[in-house]
Length: 102
Image 1 (cartoon, rainbow, N blue to C red):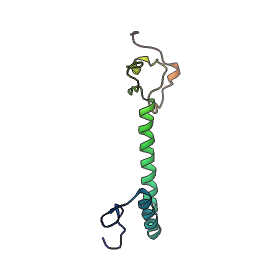
Image 2: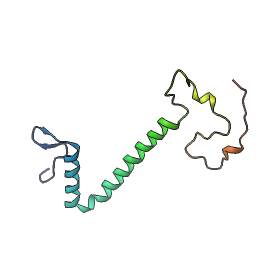
Image 3: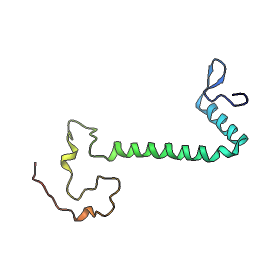
Image 4: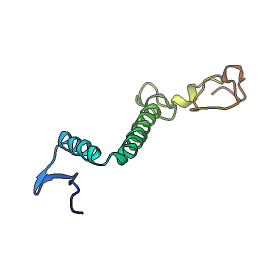
């Protein structure tokens, strides 16, 4: 498309750095202010997705980072441990154990 900056390469045959690409995006947003909400919401969505994946990797009982000392972390969860992201009408502190000990 004529008149639009190339966001992948800064000049023909030369790869652009992240700072160059960011500068091009900012200059493009200044020329087309109606695209600012698009950049804001895409940035917020990407940030939220990255933070959610980080939360899953660090706090999920399904992920074991230490196979030798903690090979099955899901077996060590108590009945009052909350492992869901959000539970609507459940008070996890008052839950009782329903199964046998392993």
